[in-house]
Image (cartoon, rainbow, N blue to C red):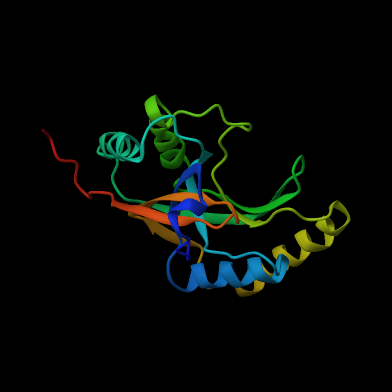
Amino acid sequence: MKCDPICTDRINSFALVSYIPGALGDFLDGLRKELVAACNPHAHVTLLTPRPLDCDFDSGKEALAQRLDAFVPFQIDLLGVELFASTNVIYLGIGKGRTEMEEMHKTLNSGPLWFDEPYPYHPHVTLAQGLDASAVPEMLEYAKRRWQESAPARSFAVDTLTFVQNTVENRWVDLLAVELTPVRVRR
């Protein structure tokens, strides 16, 4: 996401995301940098968590296209700031749109895209991770305050999904953008 490393820097780790556009995306990128200065943010929700592929990219791309054909654009409403206590990840919960994300994840996490994920799928927007445990309470309160006082909007449309690949430097590369069709086409 936001870089163009050479192909040899890329690793077998792929994900599917929807970037958060406009002022809300900009605000979340800024908040993430405030919480973890060294991160390279590009606000998004994840539909398929990072995973290796047991197939070539073209087969993965074809599997995505086939499975995404059943989905239409939808709206996501962001709730409050929360914490995954077991991993000290600070995140925004999702209200409206959560069911659609769960259905999409269930459909996509199959066939050549399947991965035995280490945690149950939980739709969210990550704000901070990799924090020292002693800093988490203060960061959590700071994120809650900033979200309540300054968030420009709390919802966005999911209409384009981006298939991304990780690199040895943990920088994500956009590989393919897929637009969700507003009306399902019967074949």
